[in-house]
Image (cartoon, rainbow, N blue to C red; front, side, top):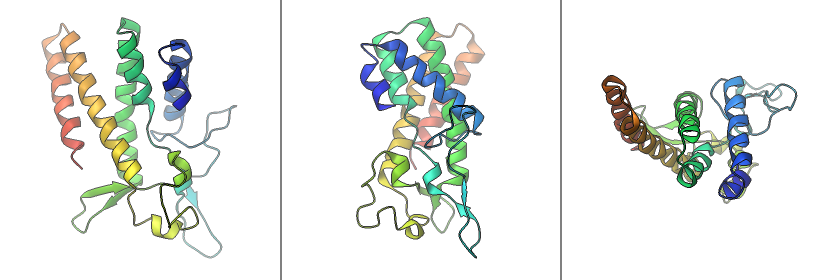
Length: 195
């Protein structure tokens, strides 16, 4: 995704193809963005659960990648606010909804009252392999109780982009009900970004 972001102004077709590929992957994998997928079927190379000898199954944190499509889509639309990019941005906006739902259900860290205070995942899955500091990748046990700043920060940035885009969709709409729906969605995304 970082390559697509860097090439968006110079090779927008590569960036669009990358976004479209990951939209297919996300759909195939039920809302999540897996770390790696098999080329032949777009299914994650990693299992979503880890089972260790004699232990109960639990989430495989290496399975999950942070959502980065918003970075690329924002750059594509900024460099070329065409109808084609607006339509693709609507697809990415909808995919944010399914990713958010999956993350909140499967990777959220909650306080005693059940409020989300962060998200967890493997440092490998974040692209910031040293983001855990002393915990590192060998400390998966601690990771189940710890939200990582990179996941939380990206989740907030993603929701703020969605809110901004929903305002653009509302401004572009000629249907009053649709415009109202986009404005409500923009407010909801911004409110959710206040984790």
